[in-house]
Amino acid sequence: MNGIDKNTLDATIAKTFKEVKTAVDAHNEKSIQMYSQALRALVELRQQIVSEEHAEG
Image (cartoon, rainbow, N blue to C red):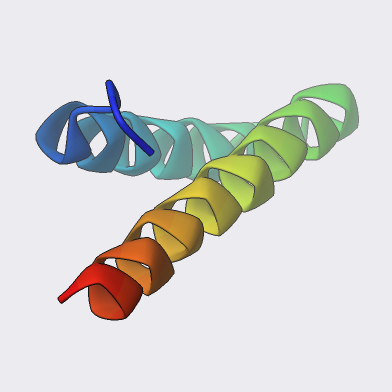
């Protein structure tokens, strides 16, 4: 995954997790769904990066 900065991705995952928590605390179902989907996609991307690193190294 050339061009993807892992530190930026990790920070984005952390921020998105906080947004999920905020949405849960506010009982905002639409935000929960939106941020949960985004978080799943970001975590999947991070897993792909780790898998590629292991395959290369």
